[in-house]
Image 1 (cartoon, rainbow over the protein chains, first blue to last red):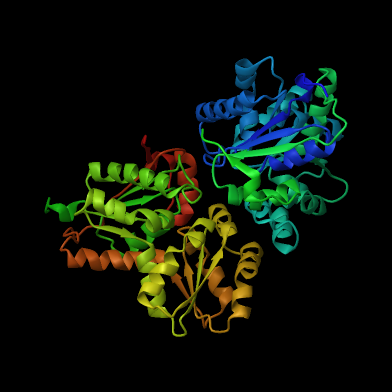
Image 2 (cartoon, rainbow over the protein chains, first blue to last red):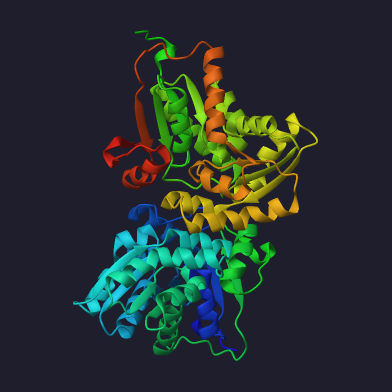
Amino acid sequence: MSMGPQSLPIGVFDSGVGGLTVLRALREALPRESFLYLGDTARLPYGTKSPQTVERYAKQSAQVLVDRGVKLLVIACNTVSAVAVETLREQFGPLPVVGVVEPGAEAACAATSSGHILITGTEGTIRGGAYERAIRRRRPGAVVLGQPCPLFVALAEEAWTLGDVPKLAARRYLAPHLDADGALDTVVLGCTHFPVLAGVVQSVVGPEVTVVDSAMTTAGAVRSLLEQLGLASPNPVPGQLALLATDDAERFARVGSGFLSTPLRAEDVELVDL
Amino acid sequence: MSMGPQSLPIGVFDSGVGGLTVLRALREALPRESFLYLGDTARLPYGTKSPQTVERYAKQSAQVLVDRGVKLLVIACNTVSAVAVETLREQFGPLPVVGVVEPGAEAACAATSSGHILITGTEGTIRGGAYERAIRRRRPGAVVLGQPCPLFVALAEEAWTLGDVPKLAARRYLAPHLDADGALDTVVLGCTHFPVLAGVVQSVVGPEVTVVDSAMTTAGAVRSLLEQLGLASPNPVPGQLALLATDDAERFARVGSGFLSTPLRAEDVELVDL
């Protein structure tokens, strides 16, 4: 077995458990790769913090992963992806750094015919406008709308992904955009919590609208980057998984089990201090 | 007009905007009093942090209010009330310090006939068990159940207090307790966000069940304490209100308007550094 950089794990970083939806997509797309995940649960949420603070936290968290040895860094957090990817590239380059915003924007532009795209996310993500800018760079004439869906975060953490409550909440957030703009053909799930609600969102927007899951598109971007850089794991066996968190391993395991679609116990989560 | 301690404002402290429901109840109960409110919005939520961290944050926040001059300190935060009231009394005594848990427990014990009480709150509040302990001290035989209702926080912050989504969410959280335990006659709203959902909760539990709003009961406790200590304002005119926050005055004003039932602008909120 090679002990070169190809055998190192991929580092995945999020402010909490939401990034586990990205980790799930990564593990499905790249079953031979090993992963080292860090959730900065002690300092979440990042979405309400200043960009300077988010950059500082992101550097500290990334340093933990880099110190343990990773071959690529995935920023599985929309807030950090929006404000700190360039800073992390400067700090840790030539280590490849992949965020979730650019792959999500790329997939939205590939999916849309009409050019009318709705971004869903936290208040901070929508207010920051990172998806809108990333989409307009690729398609200057795009009509990009934003809808903060903070209730989706709570629904995802409660694992209320079926039934009336999530469906009515999704309708309340999304129906005005469907009615107002018959041209809307693409909805981006622009928050790492939202992929577990993809089915509900799809049922509300209908089959004619493409729902872009930035977790899945990020996993695709990481796979193609590993191939381009010759960094794919040479190991024929399934990769390993290690989970780190900065607080409350019990809650991380409980809420995270749904996001990762894998049962987790608190003992599976190593606490680290930042 | 007296310039003695009676004329000083009452200090109110919360981890964010939720405590504004307590401030609203205080202003209604004590219209002549002035209030100085601090929301530590930069460091919320407290509910997921260790007791040591919560104590440290609470001391720093209380110090800001004490330095500006207050005659009484209200801890309008269930998490801080549960873990730090004694510490704050030691640090700032003889300044009177009132939390929300003891008045809520007192009101629940006064309301219940059957002794079967359901506490609703955040995961941290329910797990911490402070209401249960406070109720059992007063009524050792009480049957105290706990139901975390994290979605209520998001609903309150979205101001979704009417319609199907809050009603179905309340039913999902509360119906099992109503069915399982026909003796339940009292529900405590054990989170500062929940009073704006009191109507929804009451409609789900039915008219036979008393819904205890710890914001209102805390306001009653403060009023009686001011009278006992001779600290009530002698001013015949309506009191003043000053709002401090540690981050994001715009969001504080927007979300807080609903909690305080008073329109707020970002300019009404002074940012302070902790």
